[in-house]
Amino acid sequence: MTRQLGTTTALALAMALAAATAACDRGNAKNGNAQNASAPHAAAGGDATNTGINQRDRSDAAKTPTAQAESAGDRDLTARIRQELTSDDSLSMNAHNVKIITENGHVTLRGPVDSEAEKAKVAAAAQKVAPGNVSVELDVASR
Image (cartoon, rainbow, N blue to C red):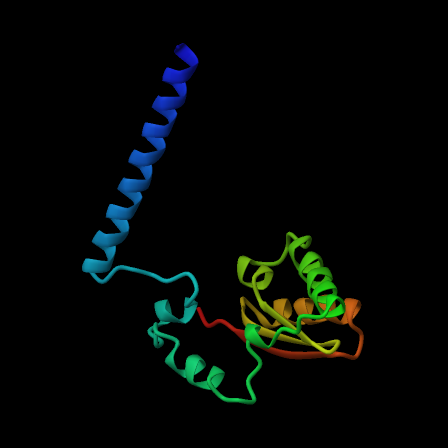
């Protein structure tokens, strides 16, 4: 009975915390204080909607994650590159989450990173796994 009560209490606390966090987010959005972690340039007065990037990605020539090939080799290559990135604790969350698009053995890296040095590290990690087959289309996020 005590264990069930402890579980119920923990669940109630977790739900209360989630509700409080959501309320804070709504309050910040109403007051114009919302910051989108996926759009770091918004804090610097840039376009928080990523309209320019979205328009670029609509081009037929732009590689997007939906271009990822379904072959086992391409999936394996993508997974190995992702492992290289996520195992490097010196990289930012942005770098850990760059888009890795592999098509017929060719890798395209897209998305924001925090600095030119980080861009070079991400590119080097991909080159280590797929030497000579990497296109780097990473953007350095302005702060």
